[in-house]
Length: 347
Image (cartoon, rainbow, N blue to C red; front, top):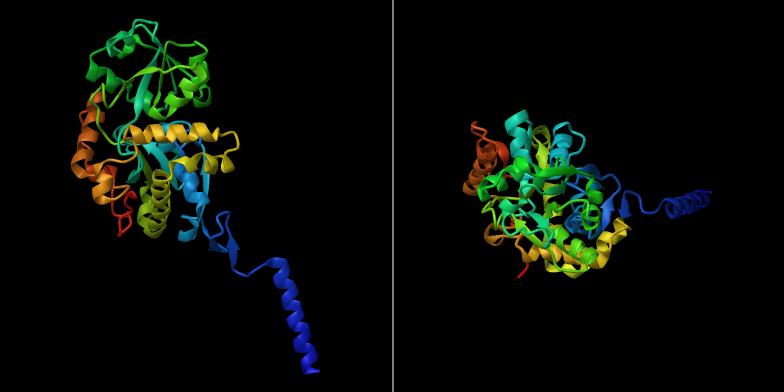
C-alpha cells in the first residue's frame, strides 16, 4: 500500500512538473535561466526606440543575469523623460544631461544621472543645400522642425550664442518626433534639428548626402550627451537595484559597440517596424562621430563621468540660458553605482 501511494505521488508530481515546467525558473529569449520572480522596472527612453543598446541588453539576457525584468517604453523628448522620472512614472530613463540640468535649475527636480550613455552630445542642424546657408548665422530667417522637449531644441540657444546668431529669428515647427524626418524631406521646413544618428535616415529618403552644423564641432559645445537617470528616492532606498540595472545596460552598450552589425536584427525583434540595415547605419554613425565612447570610456570604463567635465557641462548649460545659480556636480550625477570592475570597450 505504501508503495502504491508513493508511486501515485511521484506520478502526480511528474504531471505537475510537465504542466508548469521547472519550479522557480524560466528561460528568456536568449536562453538564460532566470528566477521566476524578477524585479520589475521600467526604462523610459528619450524618443522612439532607436538606440540598440537597451534592446541588446534585453535580448542577450544581461538584465536577466541581474534578476531584472525590464519593460522599455518610448519617450517624447528628454525634457518629458526627466519629468516622468521626477514624478516616478518609471524607475530609469535615458535623457540628455542638458535637460536634466535645466530641470534642476528651474524646478529643483530630485533626479540624478547614475551613468553616461553618450559620452558626447550629438545635436545637429541639417539644412538644405540650395538655400545659401554657409554658416550658422545663415539660419536666421529660416524655418526649423523640432520637438518642444527635445534636447536639440532646448539647447539651441547655446548653439546660437556660441556661433553668433539670434535664435529668435528662427521659426520653429514643433512636430511629433516620428514625423520629423518625413516632414523635412517633404519640404515642410528649411532645416531639421536632430542628432547624428538620423543622418543616414534623411540621406536614404533624400537620395543624397546632407549638410549639417554640429553643436559640438561647429558650436564648440563639447559636453556630455545622454545619461541614465533615476529618482533620488530610488537611489537612496534601493541602491542595489540601481547597480544591477546599470550593470546590465552597460553590458548592452559594450556588446553593441563590439558587434554593430548585429544591432539591427536584434532591434527588429522587439520593434517590428525597424529597418535593420538602417538601424545599423544609424548606430555606426554615432560610433564614427564618437558620440558613444570617449577617452573616459577607455580609461575608466563605459558609463563613467568626470567631475571637471561635468562642471563645465553644467556651466555651459546654465550660461546658455543666463541662469546665474550654482549647481554642484554632486547634485547632477554620481558614479557610485557603476560596476566595481569597470566594463571597458572590447579592443
